[in-house]
Length: 265
Image 1 (cartoon, rainbow, N blue to C red):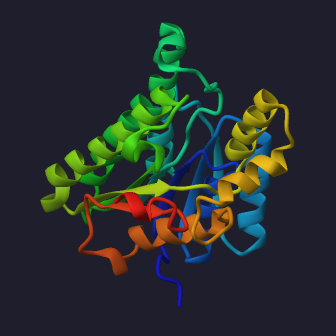
Image 2 (cartoon, rainbow, N blue to C red; image 1 turned 90 degrees about the horizontal axis):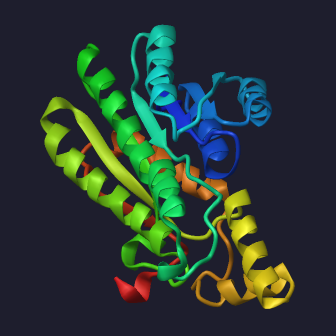
């Protein structure tokens, strides 16, 4: 039985990785999916994948560092469907380079903050306003954070700061809107086979002059399950957080990392 039949889900960063897998998972559960992505061609391929599987999806080209794009995206979902039940704020910049804290330029800092943190706040702002004005009122939002946001990471201070900020935004808003029927949770993602992770490992491998496979093998040693996760495994957590099965859960940071941070929390 489909858990989300007739519901409307918005997924940012929906053209690849966890976003793509989540869009497909929402559709499999019966939701109508609105995909937001900068790359329209890749987004259209995902929308087609959803449709082939029997779901309904539209793709909207949107840059999550653009406030006007974000506002227009949420309004587009509202205009098409008359409501917004779920939002998965998953888009993030892949342009961050590995740098020690003092070597990050002010321009790099501002760009990453805008792409990874301000964008999530702007998405939440417009999604919450949409969920408050619809009848019945309410909805569920999931924001993608990272295990790096739990305590920081060498050579990734600003990225880690954005992901830590997402957790604070999530927990704060969850308290503010709980009585109005809006649940807000965070996916704290570990390592998943996504283009972003591949790019990061390529950068590390290049800096160390070794093969990426060697970097991945080293990384897996820190994961009790001994492997990198599949995007579909993260997507299942996202859909569950949006479903009625998680009806009493809000302000939660759901860590999905194969046990990597279990010894530190």
